[in-house]
Amino acid sequence: MTWATFLLSLVQPIIFNALVALGVGVLTVTGIDLAVNTAMSWLTSSVGGFASDLVNVLAMGGVFQGFGYIGGAISARVAMAGASSMKKFFLK
Image (cartoon, rainbow, N blue to C red; front, side, top):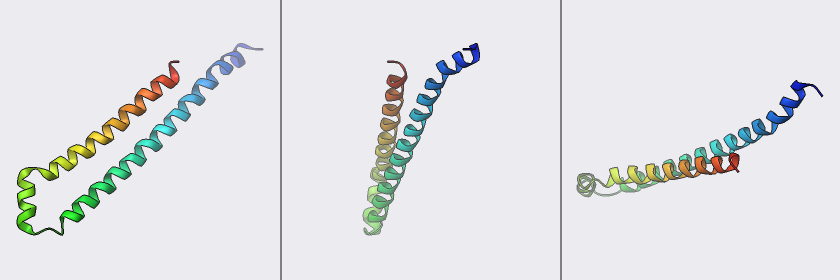
């Protein structure tokens, strides 16, 4: 066994685990981003059926900014959970 095959046999499982974790993370974040964006579009389209005076009162109250904050918080929580699980995956 040469040094090259020995080093390759050491590095290959690490590279495989890294690529698997990266793929799962990308799919998870993409799926959650799609779900949050869809929910936000449903919320804004349902508010569009309200009377204009009520929509103005909601806008002055910051309801639409609150929707953005909630969507961002959900996305950030999923990203943090993915990062911590990836760390646990590699540092056993």
